[in-house]
Image 1 (cartoon, rainbow, N blue to C red):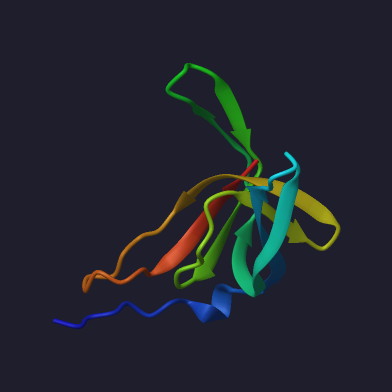
Image 2 (cartoon, one colour):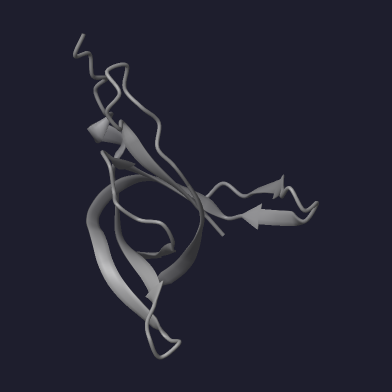
Length: 105
């Protein structure tokens, strides 16, 4: 089939840096940059309920074109550092990753 949806690049106006964090052998964390560029960023705050019945406040969302290889980490937007709470990767009709959506807390 080969159908891909066009990413709305005209909405991607915010510069961000995405870092992946992993535990090292000493028990500390290693921060590795995985993305630097433009994204669609919203500061809309919302609350969600976890499966453990805890209330979590999400403080924003960053949508990046394509697939960004990350499991956990944080986002720098200027001087602001926000932790990544969850990651969503919606698919195109042909099965490729359309975008990487980072829910921030």
